[in-house]
Length: 451
Image (cartoon, rainbow, N blue to C red; front, top):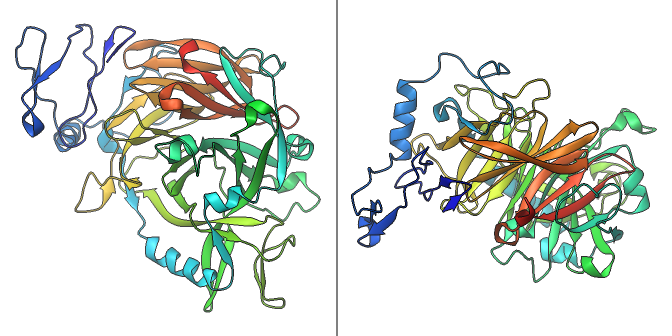
């Protein structure tokens, strides 16, 4: 595909990794069939085969930088597009907790009802309101499509901060759950802004039914994130303390960023319906009931992918799903406020889990690493080789949306105050995002064609 003067070849994990053609645009076609397809240029000559991921990792190891990348941006230039980094410096390892976490959830199912996303959508208890494009907080958006705000309490509650954005557009090929359009938003708790500053309630996900958003109100439910635990044979759970800066819903699993470690995975088919609405968490031996800090549902962790000991560090500030690459992938990125050395990475998926690029160790390495050359990134998404970055504080208090590609300077567009994570919808035609600050927090979508 050609966009903005760049030729982008398909991304094929098993057969090669795409790269742009630099300054020489070449139209590529294929000849033959099946596994024997050969890339030809427009004169019918064979093009060189792209190196496999294994070959690229070996080449990277042979020429790897002497030190891990950090905040040094002395060789970078703001707004000048994406600059390639070393893929072999980073590695995520499956923590292999799927079975152990699953057994605890099995135990919880003997005492509590477990529901999937479809069941939750039939039991939403809160109501938000649609917001018009001419609203002052959204007026700088180009091509705004839809937006909604929370109820009056959630709109102004300073103790919970919205961050990540995903939804049914990520989770299913149909972009719906049981025919319903859903947006999911993550929040983290700030106990210092409550009357119980010593009680940190952790993190939560809000599932919003946006099917009828154009007609007016939306319904939603807050769901507490929990870690299954075994308390002397009693299945239990505890809150999870994450900034939840980004989320990506992949099939049954919701991937959530753990800023310092990597990615945690939660099972949306086994949400826990609580039998107590008390302001406490977990099992109470005196009453024999479970609570989740007044939340009616809890979402349990089932897996995790953490940086290996021999990996360079990467701040997992946000994550999004790219369905438009030939190998579906998760895109992660990091927030840097004082420099432009924040990185973007693409991690291959194998179905609903990360694909092991090193089968012997079960580790996954990114098949793309870029320096974004932008500061204050709060979210990023890749659509057919072009990258969109949501950045805060780029125009006074207002943010900017940047569009860039490797070797292609960035274009910038008006955005909101306090912008956060990004989600791609409508086959790549729509971007969803959210704003975080109390009193001015909204969830909105824009037409990618307008950028």
